[in-house]
Image 1: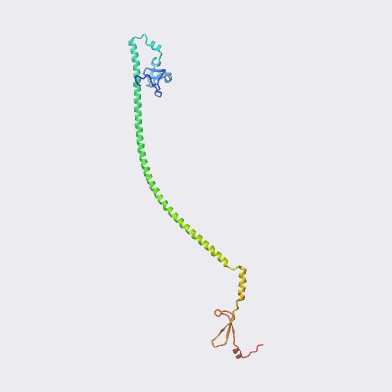
Image 2: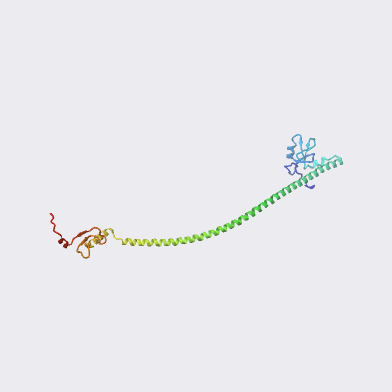
Length: 261
């Protein structure tokens, strides 16, 4: 705010609005809007909200109109001596200059505070950026390692895929061999079943074969090369164990006749 500006600001710490209409002016050179002035100065004793000064005098607090009428301007200083008018004008200008100085100090304070906050934020942002850079470098390392792991898995996957394809080819080959062998066994089994005799015909053929086969004649075995005694056997020559012995007619004639009654 400069001297050419015709707008004052409320000195209440949480207000700082532009004044218009009516305002409350204090002896400690502070000015407040009508809302906060009527609220703060209605209590007794009155205390300035800006500097905490006690305002106990009758004219320490004045509610004034900031845009007075022309009639008020024509009559407010009428009849006063020039020195009084100059004194009143000097005090009014001092009040205005104090407001300008106060506003400038407030703006400088706000600027310094903003700069301190900016520096603090810049420091925080710098630290955050450094931590982010460290995290990014770590993540880049992790990404590189993960890429290596992924390449290794890709290589293993390709190897496993090739092995699987080879196993599938072997399986298809074995499946073809199995199918061909099964078909061959089915054909051979069907041929064997066709060659087997039927059950009724088999019994008839066996009976006919037994009837057509001649009975084996009894064999006579010689006892000695020069003897005439012979043995009759109903078994094979090489498998005979029990047999009956028959005497020759010559031996029977040479024995004495025994009449058995």
